[in-house]
Structures are given as C-alpha cells and as structure tokens.
Amino acid sequence: MINEQSGNYPAGDANVGAAVRLMGYNLTVHNAYFRNTASGTTSVGVQIGNSGVAPFYYPWTVTLGLKNSAGTVVRTWDTPWNLRTVQPLTIRNFPEWNAGADPSYRDFGYRQYFQHTVDLSGVAQGGYQWVMRVKNPLEAVSASAKKLRFANATQQADGWLGLGSVTVGTGGGTPVTYEAEASGNTRTGGAVVATCGACSGGAKVGYIGNGATLVVNGVPAGTRSVTIHYLSAVARTALVNGQSVSFAPTGSWDTLGSTTVTVTVAAGGNTVTIANPTGWAPDIDRITVT
Ligand SMILES: [Ca+2]
Image 1 (spheres, rainbow, N blue to C red):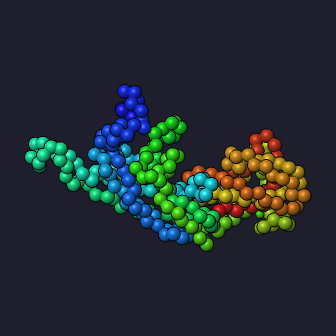
Image 2: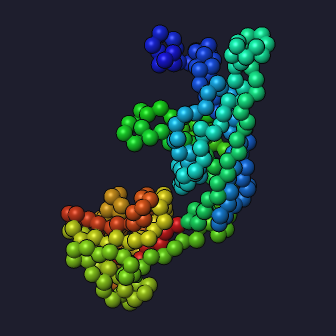
Image 3: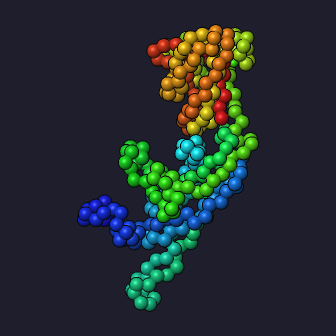
C-alpha cells in the first residue's frame, strides 16, 4: 500500500494521493438537501458520486448526526444507505473492447441520491451542523481504525463530513418527564418509593445507593440532556449511566433541587440508571429528558 509508507513515499505526496485514487473509490457528496430550519421529523438527503475506479466494497453503516457549535455530536441516526451502490462514474475500456485509443473511458455509474427521515424530538433548540460519517466496524476494537473520508473539503478529521448548517426550532426540544416512582421503572436493592409533598406526583424514590439502583426505562436512545430533580440535605454523588454526578445540598430532605447532565442512552437498553455502589445517592423525584 503506497499510502502506508511501504516504499517510503510520504502519505501527503500529491502523486501518491493521485495514484491511490486511481486504485479505488473516490466518493464526493455533491449536494446535500435539508431544511434550513427544522423540528419534529425532517428529511436529509445527499447526492454521492464516485470518481474513482471501483465502488466502496463494504456494507458499512452511514450515520447522520447533528454537531453543535462546540463540536459535540449531540444526536446520531443510522441510515439504511448502501454506499456500495455508488458505482464509478467512468470505467476504463479494456483494449479487447476495441472502443478506441487506449486508455479510454466510458460512462458507467451515476450519482446516487439517498434520503432519510429523522426525528428531532428531544434535540434542544439552536444552531447545529448536519454531519454524516461512515462507521468502520473496526472502530469498535481500535481507536486507530481507518476512517472513510470523502473527497469534500468539509471532511473533518474526526470522521464526520459537514453537510451544512441547520437551526432546530420550536418543538424540537420539548422535555419529557419520567417520574422516579413510575411503575414502569425498575428499583433494585433497598430503593423504595416514599411520599413527598414537594415532589411532582407526590412521591419520590429514596434509599438509592450502597448498591441499590433506580432504573428509568423507556428513554429514547442517544446523547441526552437529563435534568435530575432530587432532594438531599447533604452533598451526595451518584453514577448516572456510569457517569459520576455531584448533587449539591438542597437545604432539606423536603426541598427540591436539580442538576443537568449530558448522558448517553444506549440503543436497545433505553435506560437511565442512577446508582452509587459505595455510598448514598440523593432521593429522586423525577428526571426530565431532552
Ligand atoms: Ca415524583
């Protein structure tokens, strides 16, 4: 592989780049289609061309994402798009085809249009950038797994390709409330529901921690902003989906406070778990998720 320095060729050499492109795919997103302002469900489309000599051969998943102004991807959506269908725009004629002087090329593939509908529910209002990437399965086992790069100038080093700016508008950031005491939740160990006059629903869950957990079920997967409404007369900490969160004292066990953390909710699991293996967590009234 020339670009792997097997012949002491620098990877940034323009001639090396040209030679590599002669050997494989060269994918460009020629156009991206989306609303400048979106909320609820909205569609994102891209038109992809291949100026290389071969298709991309692997069924890697193409993922759409929203990147905020801080560069954080706040939500992703896997698409069913199949990059292998993006065939080379031209292919080289074989001499035996007698198609003319060698080398000669003939038209072959077309730019392919892909579209996917995404649900923006829970995405906070604000300005974002639509991004897309192709997931190398090896990323699951190695941080140094090669990232598929598009030929666009907006290809970013982290693997994401910028598609353009979008504003997520009203209706996209409505928080959903999950009462801690809801019957659909799972409590383990000594965690118990207790009456609580200050709490929504008139109840909270106490005695979380020291092994006891509160698992809120049915939370949509993705990177979520979770506001935890809690009560605690003393400073406490808890693990929220494995992430350590500090809870400042609220003044008393009957006074509500809240703290907001960014939490990853796993697809399939769809849970937010509040735990503390080695100490007590605060009492929990409810969580709100956006
Ligand atoms: Ca409650």
